[in-house]
Length: 440
Image 1 (cartoon, rainbow, N blue to C red):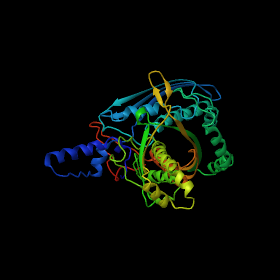
Image 2 (image 1 turned 135 degrees about the horizontal axis):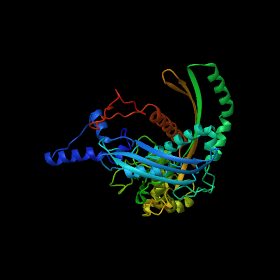
Image 3 (image 1 turned 180 degrees about the vertical axis):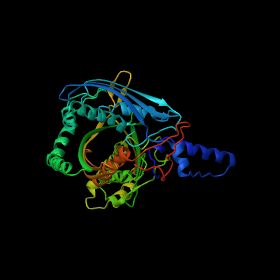
Image 4 (image 1 turned 90 degrees about the horizontal axis):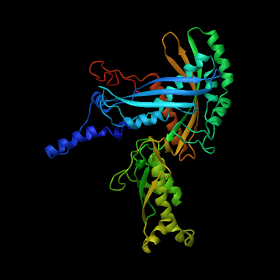
């Protein structure tokens, strides 16, 4: 698939439409390859956000009220801007009790290219506004920012501004915060950093510790479904087709693991069919951090039916291989193919009434970063990063750790090095390629 996954959720229509138009007029197959500068000008970026806020808090830093207005640069067309804005608005709270909250977001039409989906889909834009606000508050009342974050952190049973309660069995951020603070020896390292900063003039060090939660579900209810098609062959091999696309994130590997575990066969016997509409129709986008859940449950449901169908043969043929069992079932005219489907239960939210379940659950984490800054040049070095993530029961720890590390690196680039520059007159993107744009 290549890079730019979020942009391909919708902006691929620009390329596909041109190719289809050329094929229609010429009667020939058309291949369209864009130069990098043309691609970047056409496909859009992560939405820039602007926010204004007014906050009320006690002298010790406990939040009592927040009024925030979010403005998103959508570019010249809607694209997915409303969905991005909705997620930004619903992630303004991050992990904190805001008190009385009045949060309003607007998409602004501008003369830039139409901005589109990008990793976190508005979540990080909403969270960073609140984190910035908390830092301003900490400076204003002269209270450590870590203290403000901790005392305002949600407890189990609290309710978010979008009316979703945080259940005791699912809410682990406070425990992860305390665990990371203890295991990363934050107090000891702060003492070392204070001594370093006292004895050096032009290089300074600091620590930052930030929690996060991210809602898992599509904002559009009907997208919260997955499907699969599983075939068992007489030689014991299994072919799995599902509605997710592989883009290097390891989705196919996880689907193969689910099938192998459910059917109780070696992983080497599972083969994944590349995603196509003739095997998995009406698929949802591979997005919203929900693809393993949606397609994984669909694969599980199909394999569970097949496993139950083959159970009598396994009970009768104790020492037989799976290939022998499959062939015997075939000779008995047993169906060895099954379609699976899964729909996220209980999901559905009304923005007009601020009611319903917006997210099925939250992934949660806490990160601690130590940075050294050259105060003369502004250059910085990340000396150490500690992260604790709650990902539930991991399907594949190696893949999940890679995703977590990659997400941190990408987020660090977004906050420190990535910068888009536009012509103030025409709105044309000026940072069009590797020569003047640094990938986050």
